[in-house]
Picture 1 (cartoon, rainbow, N blue to C red):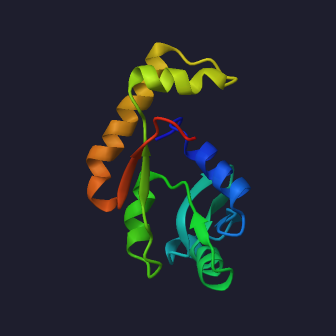
Picture 2 (picture 1 turned 90 degrees about the vertical axis):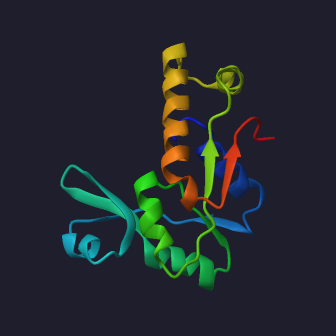
Amino acid sequence: APNVGRHELRRRLLQNEPYLFDVAIPHTTRARPKVACHSFIEFGQYDRDLYGTSIDDIRQIVHIKQKICILNLNPEAIQTFNKTDLYPYLICIAAPSFERLKRLELDRREYLTDKDYREIIRKSRSIERRYHLLFDHIFINNDLD
């Protein structure tokens, strides 16, 4: 779910262990056939261009660079990713309790209301309930340190 620490965790892993972890850079294309033939693990549209994460790029990171590829996927992409030959290890980064989430978010530059925090937790719990069978591990972000 958004705002539970996924991006910060990814940033720290890449910074602290760059020899072990890497990320696939999203591509931009105007060609719908690539999307239709499942060349992307997930994709979206911005203006007229499609953008997405290429399965071939993930393969290159895993097989050629021999690194662990970190992806922040939308929940809908998890089912697609599980059907690839990449054998992903899927971890859900879940929101902690309301009080803990507020403490973790104190250093954010953007102001969040109590209503925002409740919505973050609601979305996180919804993803956990809906996709829990697809995750190898659910990590509750009580503290990234």
